[in-house]
Image: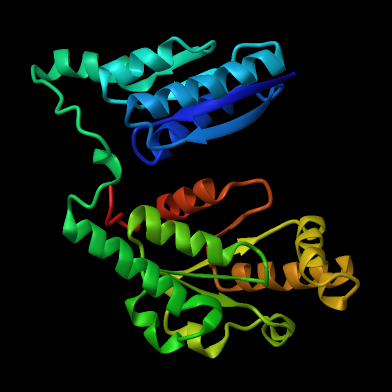
Length: 272
């Protein structure tokens, strides 16, 4: 079955996407065509969104699901007239919270993604810069500043995980690739030895790694299944020899990998 899901917001749409996708993930047998419409902050843009929703309903033969985080009541009422099943996220949660807290919401647009806390914003940007500067073993002399150092074979998911840790949690995450020389000797590379307490390993199924590498460099030794199997065995041997915690990234999202790393290392988030 195929259905259309709309994420509609008077801001970036990130909140609507995050909450909406969490709910859609519970319906694995349905394929969703996801459409985000951000900055619906006036009546004209709201009516334009309604036209898109109604067109999708006509084409699909089913009502689209609508996740909205629109603050303005008149604009929400326009969206509510669309031919769709509307999940008004703010109406569902803000009203009960007002009752529980005994206070009125400010009903301000873009609060969750604005630069309202300069200190937190600086933490996030500093962490992102650190992840980029210390990607792929580029600047090992800065590892004393790292909260965590991810290690693993090439294309096992180190870089995107480091960037997610930086963006979402303000964590300074470096990463270091394990080369064939390291794997053959089953030794920790010299730059990592004095930082063993910061190391966390990533592993991956050989078949999946071969697929990923083939997209980058097809018909090469680098992408061959035998090479991938050999490198993964060597990496896991290093993890086991030096008691380095590690996890498999094959079927886990970047969000899951990052959260599990924090849970297993007890690293404190700088951003909540």
